[in-house]
Length: 441
Image (cartoon, rainbow, N blue to C red):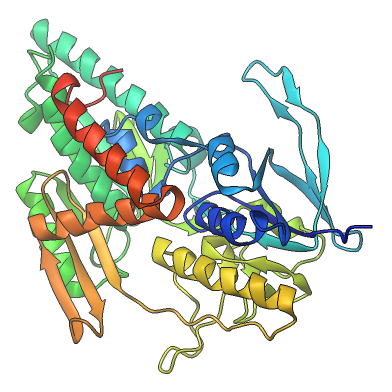
C-alpha cells in the first residue's frame, strides 16, 4: 500500500494564500510529498491593493484577474471554490457551502474537505464601527465586485451630470470618501485623474476640475495616521494640489441618502459615498469551532502562526492576530499589510517542510520594508526602510510611483514566474495604443 499524502488545505487566495499555494504546489505537490488544496469563494484572483484602480476605472479587472484553476494546473495544487460553512476540528474536516449562479441556480453542492494542516488567510473586510447608514448608503471596496459596482455608479453619475450641464443646469457631482488611510487617499487621487480622462470621451458639458467635488474625511488629526507625519504632510499637499477637500479631525456620525453628517455637525452632500475607515476579519471566523479570536474577529496565533487552540491550524495575513517578537515592538501585533501576509506566507513554506520532516517550526519576525501610497498614474509617496538604505528614507514623485508599480510585478512573479510576467508586461505595453486610457463601461 502507498502511504497517504499529507493534506494541506489553504483557505483564501489573496496576497498571502495564492503565492503560498503556488510555491507549496511546486515544492511539495509536484514531488508527491503532499496534497495541496486552495479554497476560495471566487473563481478568480485580483490583487486587493489594486481595487482602488478598478473602482476609479484605471484598471479593467477582466484584463488583470487570474483563474485559480489555471494556476492550479501550472503549479500542481487543487482548487476548490466555495465559502467556508463550518469546521470540525475533531474530524479534521472543513465544510464548504454550495456555489450558485447570480440567479440562485446551484453550480456546486455543499462539500467537506479533509485536512491534516489547515492554513487560513482570508484577509479582511470593512469595519463600519456601527455608524448608522453605512450599510445602506456607502460602498466598501472589499472585493472586485464592489470595485466594479462603484465604477459603474461613478460613470452613471458623471453621464447624468453631463446631461444636466447640457440642459443648462448644474453639473456638480459630489463624492465623499470616508477614511484617510491608504485606500481612501489612493482612491481620491485616482478618481480625480480618471474622471478627467472620462470627460475626454464625449462628456462635453462636464468640467471635471470644478464639477467633480471630492471630499476625504478622516477621524484622526491627519490622514495616513499609520505612517509618519512627514509622509502625511506630503500626501495632503499633493491631494490639495489635485483640488481634493481633505478634512482630518472629522469623525462621521451618520451616512444618509444624500450625504454624510459628521460629529461636528457639518454636512457633506454626496452622490456617492465610499467607506474606507477601518478593517476587521470576517465575522464567520468567530464561530469556527471554538478557535480563539479577538474583538476584530482575527484568529489569535502564536509566533509560529499556529492558532492558540489547535496546532494543526495556522492563520496569516489580515485575519491573524500575530504578536510581534522583534525588540522594541513587544505587546504589538503584526500590522495588516500586504507585505506582512507575503512574509508570513514565505515563512509558512518553510514551516510546512519542517512539519513534514518533524523539525521545530520557525517563529515569525516582521521585516518592515516601508510603505508606499499611490497618488495616481504619475505620483506616489512613502518611505523605505531597511539595511540597504541605512534606516528610513521618505520618497515621493515618479520614483515612488515606479516602486509602487513594482510591488504588483513582484506579486505577479510570485505566482507566474519571471518569464510569463515579462511577456505579459510587453503585451500590455503594445496594447496600450489600441485601448482607451480608462474603462468606459
